[in-house]
Amino acid sequence: MDPNKISADVQAAATVLEGHIEKRLGTDRPLAAITMGSGLGGLARAIRDPLHIPYHVLPGWPRPTVIGHSGEAVVGTLNGVPVLGLSGRVHLYEGGSPDRVAFYVRVLGALGVTSLFLSNAAGAIREGLLPGELMLVRDHLNLTGTSPLFGPVVGTESRFPDLSFAYDPELRAIVRSTAESQGLPLKEGVYAAMHGPAYETPAEIRMLRTLGADAVGMSTVPEVIAARALGIRCVAVSCLTNFAAGVTDEPLDHEEVLEIGKLVEHDFQKLVAASVARFSEA
Image 1: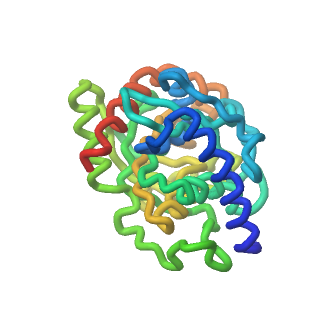
Image 2: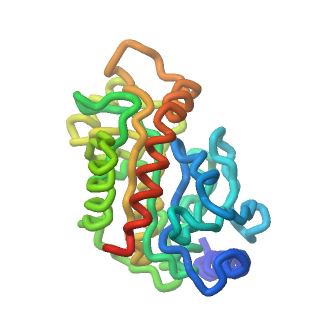
């Protein structure tokens, strides 16, 4: 890994994206970036007067290959607030180094974005959590076996970022109170990130439960680590799309994950839109 090349690629993508942001927002800047992963793919349609920028026009930007991740940045306003939506992400299991997963986060840092709202699909582990529910991430377990910070320091990133409050308490409080005002049930828990792409075995789920995990997925954690190294505040919500392996006798199916995501998409989008509009309070 050449940190100078990474920095150059990040700056090149940021320069191009900055031009699109100015074209749409003028002197305004996005109050937050939103990673529109599983369960939030349709949020792009809620962004007003959107400017769509395909990832392939942004130098060096990795392109997602997973169904449900369209691969474009969307600049516009959400509930009157300027935002940058990121429709699709790459995952560790898609290949390459962790730098690919963290690339867009580093671009956000170069753009001066200060808040990041992440979403993901996750399997429910803790008793009482059900498919179709949303879970506010309180903390995480990084069980991917890697980190986007391995190797030489990139740019101005912290060598040893503090992850005591990886998921910002003030932003979490806003999401929690927004859900309450909408009458939307919102669970809270610890998210375990695994490398994937195979779903976990029942034995691995028993291990995760013992370690204190409430839900499990294959994303989010590398991005949060990179964001905290850049001083970007993070909040994340998991869309619980299935029971984790062994919780029931039913086999796991990615198509079913997508279907459950669609069922909660409307409520999920409302929660994100209303929460982000309040981020200036934090």
